[in-house]
Amino acid sequence: MNTLPPIIRVFAALLLAVVTMQAVAADLRIGYAPNTFYAPILVAKQKKWLDEELAAAGQTITKIRWQSFSAGPMMNEAIAGGQLDVIFTGDFPAILGKATGFNIRLIGISSSGFSSQAGVVLTGSPITSIKELKGKKVATFKGTTAHHLLVLALKESGLKTTEIELVNLTLPDMNNALQKGDVDAAFLWEPMLSKLELDQSIRVICDGKGLKNAIAVIEATDDFVAKRRVEAIAVLKAFRRGAELIRKNPDEAAKLVAAELNQPEPIIRRSLDKFTYGPAFSDDIVNALIGTETFLKDQGMTRVNVDINRFIDRSLTKELGYK
Image (cartoon, rainbow, N blue to C red; front, side, top):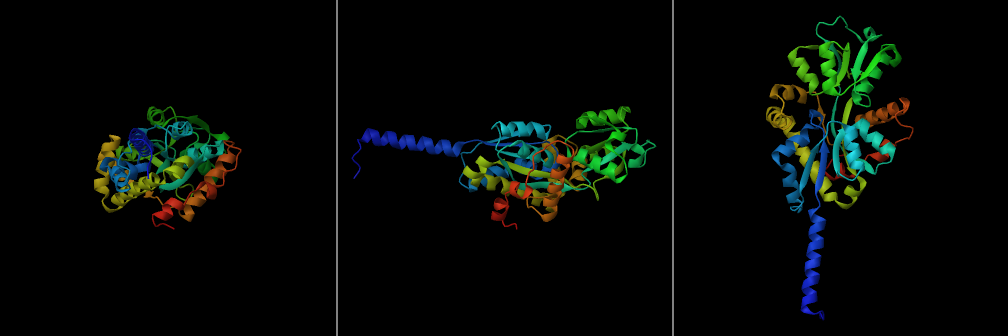
């Protein structure tokens, strides 16, 4: 028999309701870069599929906060500072973040694509091969997968990085420098690559085939996965729905992603064809991530070993039926 006075019972009930609501109402904070490496989650954002998945899981009060970032390092800072729960980022910043000591894990793969990045020159350039870059100015963004491709391409051609003049630029600045003739070549990525191909302003002299698969990952904080697993699963389910639409109806998907990125639809449609979208971890993907980790150490970007197999949390994708 409850012997508490009525006023105390009412207060206790209200307090329990507030605590419960606060636990459920925590914002779901998602960071992403505005490009086609993360197209499935952008499709899901446009379709409000994450809202649907959260509602289906009983998380109807959760508010989704989407935040766009121009580059992975900035997302790293935000997730390390407790400002984000999940980010869609490249393998480089993810591994660097883990090496720095961030409490994060990989919960899925966003995309992979050998032709999603390339070394390019202007259409009228006399340069036709990587060997001809010796002594030339070559632009890329250091610490990106395109930077990795550049180093691998030079090595395959018998060149050292010291035999070119490496110009570190962001993607927009890289293209501007190339078009103005301030650099001789650039190693860049999607969807800028598809835009320049459709403009017929550049010629590809090297892509990732046989050298480097560009991997984008889905990363979450350890605390988020441990305490809000249902929401983590909802993110992957919404992402999977986006990936399925891209496979089944790429034209519709291109419209949605083009609207999200404010880019011409033909560029996005061409770009989508250059990717395989996740979220499952395949052996090839894991090996590619291990290769990235080795590269980062070889380049002196980190001195800390990251065990990729421990960094990966397969439990969520397994819950969705993947091996």
